[in-house]
Length: 236
Image 1 (cartoon, helix red, strand yellow):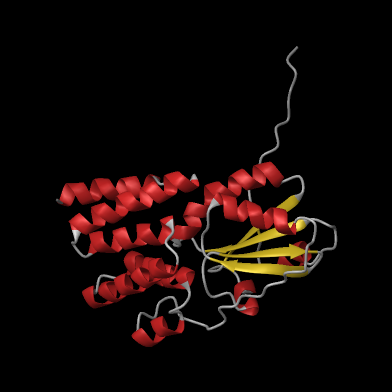
Image 2 (spheres, rainbow, N blue to C red; image 1 turned 90 degrees about the horizontal axis):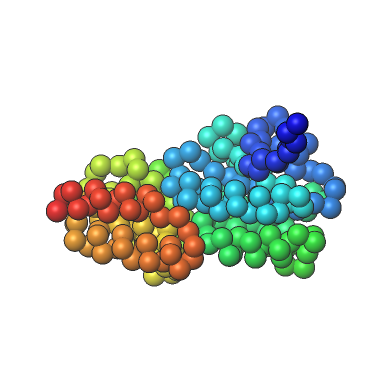
């Protein structure tokens, strides 16, 4: 007779407007990691395997939830304007709010920091200027000039949705500023993608390789960048 072993599955639970309040406003001494994402958001997709790994490791003590901003109004109510955005909630209190993708080490550090309900360093987002992810005007870029994550989100959205060379060149300037503030795998990858889309293949290849080097150091997945390199080489 075979023994049946039940192996728990780990995955972020999708919340809607209908159940968000009942799931988030609870007092059960468990940390909640809430992920605001969008299906078109590249950095969000790159965070998926990191969150799955951390969910598997901490799922017995931490609740991992996600909200699709295109299917919900919760993000509007909370003033969420960048994707991804992560909230760390403990006993109905928002302990910290972080915008942008990050390394597994940084996310795990935040989970450990707040797992016991540490509220000494309660942080609301310090980057409060609203901006439109589909507005590529210089005035909109100026609003987020000191936010690496927002600049990268805007630049990535330009890569995914725009073909106007003027907008793409403006997006390149935005992501270059993002890298100047804080070079990460995600914004270096965005830079490579935009260079590829504007036909600057030699620089695109160089940046893509730099992105992969950063990803290897931080233990991040870089499959999409490898695919980008193949596309670049095909055009050279």
